[in-house]
Image (cartoon, rainbow over all chains, first blue to last red; front, side, top):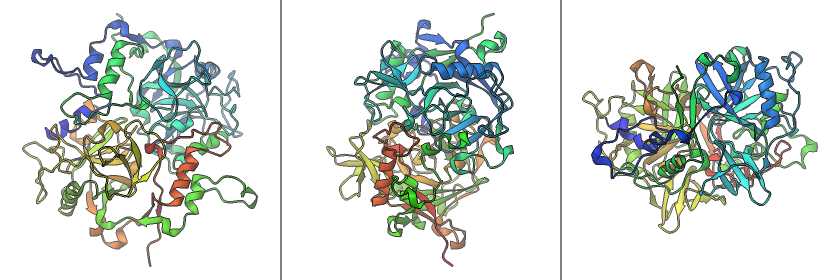
Length: 305
Length: 305
């Protein structure tokens, strides 16, 4: 069917897994075929102690936290989650081609929700020392940073001159909203990038993790009519049932996920197959891929009996 | 209110227009202030003969066509619109962080809708000669193309070695779905980029224009459960009331819009103010902007009495 094949090979993170035919051995492998053939050792499981479950009416979004980049924010977020801070709060902002934001719509006001034992203010965690940090560098040029790649599965950048590294604002990354002061965030108000990657925010705000499953629940939230996508009526907000640490959820209710290691051969090969498309559909392989066009392969794993 | 200012200055296309205070004269102007101060001559009106109105239950999306880049496709699309081809058809695909696609869900099948006097096949219009084409070049580097900028308001790229120019797959750009053969599109099945810009498609498929208003109607369409975002049930599709050429709509029902000229001083200044943010919120101006992070200023104009 013409239209269904129309953009077939253009899919960035195609869920399609074409079966191997014996006579197709000569064909270059697709990214999906490379991923499917990756050995078990190329996959890592999410650490439940650094995983959040965001429960919405439409389902569960799963967030991997980045404690090595934002230790103070991640610690505070874990406190907030443990104490049920977000339960019953909402997604109160959705700005087209930019972010959705959630937490307490009354934050900063008199009737703001109490934040229990969480800290009210944290230091800015915009960047950190690159030394000692794994970094799977992409060969591709990037206008925003001297070096880009992945660190522990997160899109990241590095500057050899300053010796600093930082997480980058790719689609699905989560940051901690702040006021004008650099140290005015505490992780209670979080935003998720939902459009063209807003890389101008890199090193200007603390990124705390990324959505590894369920972005489609967040990206479709109706845009708010107010400037910057805020809703003008409380009933337009989307309720948050709960945000919990996976480690505090009974094992039977957890979502077992694995992510392809970004230092694996399969990951490098999958990126290369996207950088230079070798299938029939592509007439002009780009020879390049932007950091934020690289998708992180995720798969469900069978729960142990 | 802390959270409402939290990402204030981060807005890519902020609708906020801070009023000038006398004592703020020394402050660098924001992009919005620059745009607001642009003279009337820096604005152009949409040409009704190259503008489409896509009518959905939620409102009207407005598309500007690019006849200088895709003359054959634009001519065919105008024929299809004039003859009401899309009226009663649907958006039948929404793939997260990639595209929505619309037209005839039965395209290529026995019960496909007849396409009247439109051509069934067109030549590929992936690129064209750069000679004679206006090009407002960005100084910024780009991993996908040797030169990038704007041509007649559209994001575009150019290669001085080959003398070719092409439109680029930024958020909101519209292309003509095709099968494996380069010349298998005719403009009846169209897609709109709704996530991180899929620049790997540049020069691989014919871009025909862009959504200049109403992207928020398209970007929030629930993602389809099938591979590549197709819906598995016809009732999940979003109905298209009609797609009409603005020139065929009574003047009183048209949406009067103006776009900031990309060869204007105001546009260059607004881009620079985003490339190097000078407001208090930004602690680390990027010194760079990606082509697809540049937003095209659009404003409503009063209808003549």
